[in-house]
Amino acid sequence: MSKYLIALLIVVTFLLGFFVGIKYAETKVKSSIESSLILEKIKDVFKIATVEANINEIYQHKDFTWFDLSPFRKTAMIRLQATVLAGIDLDSSGIDISEKNKTIRISYDPNPRILSIDHKLDYFDLQQGTFNYFSPEELTLMQADAKKTVSEKALQTGVLLRAAQRKDELFASLQQICAEFGWTLVLDPKPIQKSNLMK
Image 1: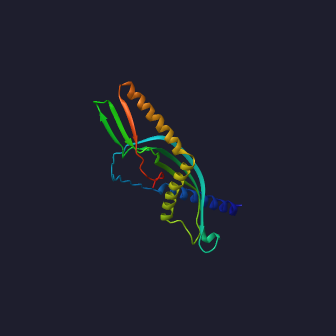
Image 2: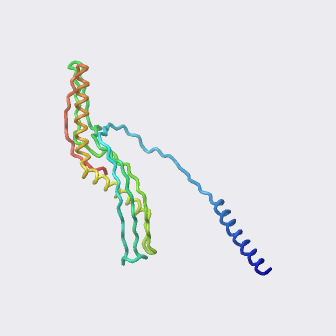
Image 3: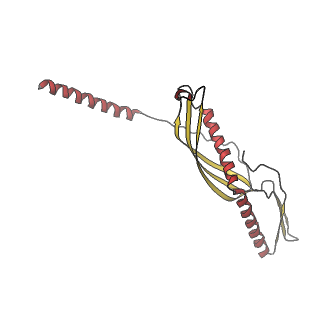
């Protein structure tokens, strides 16, 4: 009987020591995060966003070296969430005000553009093989590909057509407001050939 009691006491002591050791090790883990803000450049812009589109997509990335077997394969299931702003870029516009004639002339590029893309990638399932793993460069490339994918999807949904309609509504309202104050708003569209996709 005493042999069983001693054996039980040894097992309980061992388990108690094991769990205390785990808890002690968990409390010893310290992490440090440092951040430095570096302001690179501030630029004045004149852009009018007229449409916001929210895009959600799940896509899979898979590649392998030599053979499509587990040690040589890497896969990623990624959820992409993005907000796309489309509208008109008035950075190259010109505004001429004539107090004598009570006219405001705006020369601008009427073609709508994708103005900004704010996207986030969530890596749901990142599996790497023994001989094939994701490098930091590949993860950065996935970010760039995601931005390009969002831009293309936004164009497919007709976001630029909607942005053009909203631009026309906005300028019609501005013309009406100017007319109420006795002024005339003259719109002088001058198309500039640029890509609608963000780089």
